Image (cartoon, rainbow, N blue to C red; front, side, top):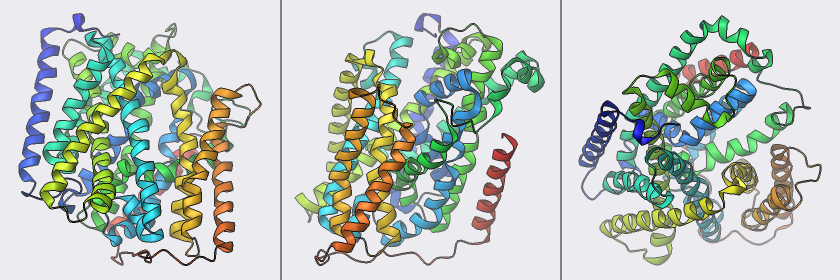
Length: 520
């Protein structure tokens, strides 16, 4: 593992240079923001490359880099399903959800659902989203990043978390989504360069592709494993991932916000398409280094150290500093996007809608800054709490918990958009009692009765989503209460996608089908 005392002068110079460029981009982006304009949707100015890099950057964190390499070391490319299967749901975002979101001209997804079902649903969803961002995005990302920075610089977790938040909050408060999006482009290009360098050097050391294939098990190159496989059975992936996929890619504020800020629908659809192409890189850039590590260092005891083992053994002085810069870039990207989403949700769905409907733009911006600071402090507190009980491997456990958070949101958005008969009472049931049911099953599965012969957690997620959809259908059919005042039909942009959008999406779909055929 890299430690600060092993960093040479050149490494420190690259780290300082990286942050200098990052801050310069953030300041430049903030200067491009029109005075008095909203922080949250970048004046609807984002183009396809900003959107693609922002969505991918929000999705990529140091935990993903390290965990993906670990998964590659232990099981091969099968965990790549979580990256490659995503193209289906990114496509759903581009052609089904995005036209409705942009057609409704909303700032947040709770606002969108409020248009559909009324204010009560908007309130429930706003607080649901705030809690989800604080825990699943901010606290867990800070925990993973804090562990990394603590190991490198030997400083306490709370100081590590505050350092990361200070950099991320700077961009969020200075330039809002525009600054976050512009810095994401720079950071993700850097990430691609470093990870690709690891793969190229690793392949050279192992004797090329043929040498790599000869040194690892044959089943390391298969995407679908038998249902008897405990970790990655094919059926739970095929049925369960769509529940998480719809929630994550189509209804999560942190992921969808760049599309909401698109210059127009065409740029939003092209940006989502670019994200789909970038997701292909997850396997060669993040999982393949772990497989290369197995071929080069088969005696490594801890698979979680696979990524850093490759870095410390293969990279010269200077490149080590660049890797730390890249990992920090991934952290800043995810945390910055999450802080901006948190600020947007509270300011627009709680402050403007409930507390101060006549708020001026200056008051809205000031509230957004205040929420960013408070959210940062709360997430640090949760991070410290997680760190105090990390012996329970809470971070890994929480990845499974995400499978139990997804069903209510997926059920509400799917029925809310695809079935006009869905009622407010049905939506509120899924978001309240449905959430308690899903999380209750998750607690039993993970902590209370883990010794039971449970189905795979992704299959459980699928069952829960089907149950909630069934309950919502029954409630809607029996519900005779009139629609809440202020509800309105979902608007949709009737803007044509254009031949380029359709052609690029067609090409991506063909490539993904080809990859799945080749690796099975």
